[in-house]
Length: 199
Ligand code: URA
Image (cartoon, rainbow, N blue to C red):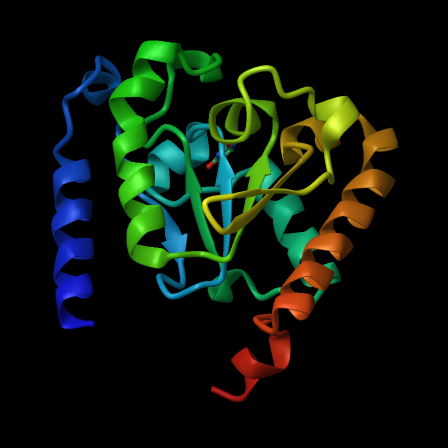
């Protein structure tokens, strides 16, 4: 455990100083991740936006606030899951992450997976799904479907930013979020809001 904590801190420090791609020059803050490093469930988004770049915390802007509402709706406390992104630095003007930037950054996420050892990984949106599930992943057609990779259950849901733009996707999102909750219960690893309240 102590080793794991030391490795985690070393990883975070390395990431904070990273200059492996040009985004290291333009970021305000590096956005490593947030939540419980012992979580069974990890969410992986695309890349930090403006608010995340300002604060150093993932999913704190409008999309993040909407994500919080879905987490609450299915009784998943945000502090009992771990939330990270494919890219740790903000691409200018929130453009899609380039492949070279993803290649430069993905090692940090892989190390986060190795140290957290989640049972379930949820991709938030197509960029994460294309990187972590399959390069030709089609979010509209395949969201909510499950695959197992290296003993980890994986799925993808719509990116919360897409739900801000298109209200018609919200019903599907709620259904997918309930299915995630159910998967954790099947695996016997579901946290709940009451656990947090009693701490
Ligand atoms: N969008 C993402 O993909 N990640 C964030 O952290 C914020 C917005």
